[in-house]
Image (cartoon, rainbow, N blue to C red; front, side):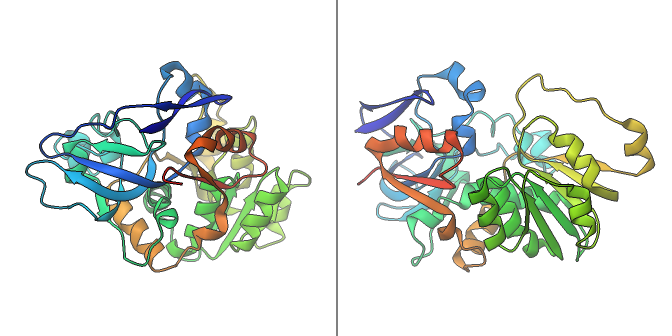
Length: 338
């Protein structure tokens, strides 16, 4: 089978790999669509482990199941999760499945940018979701990123009518914009340096803000500072911007992936005096994936408007360049069967 093997953002090669064999409890999934995630192009995060096959936002058709598998069968259209928890450790039992060591080490074989992947038994047991008949594979690839967004806004636990500011309108930021009204937001604003991303945020209902001007004043003219500031970019100065824009008693939600070793001086007095809550969120659990799939099936978020490129597997390198560049692309979908 063919697989797109990552060596760096500028070096993604189509190579032949054997079709993975499956054992008891496992399944072979034919990948129909796989989304390129922003984390896929973070070289500090990926390059040390290269070469490898990336791709974790997948949807496809079950081609084969191993002995003992009863939950799915060949021909089923499914979404698969690459990270699944043990459900027995102290983190899982406390409802923090995304902190589980098992969740952080489970994955596909080899990865979603391939014609087929082996789903390990634990993934088959805890991370496969049947697709609604009317749902496209493309739409289904948004299940995982939307699950991450839903978890983040769920743990933020904001009251109805709250005001939201999303800093950074890449794909994750845009999904936060779209999800905020589902969690009762009364106002949403979004920032980005790229005009096309700001326009996309505006189409999703946000008040867009560019690089120029006074962001706290912009918010003040529209009703006040934000009760919830969601940080979806890792640019220098972004945390200072979040602090300047959060209302007293508000919450700053750290969602973007900062580079290891990133430090920032904290104005502790101001944070204390204004009762600012700072939280972080990583990944999503099974309930979040099921909620995401339900929201997508109901059409509550129109993710089709976020897809800018649909490419066959042999153009995966082009897809990586588009996402790394961050200007002409919102969501790039790889279709390995084309």
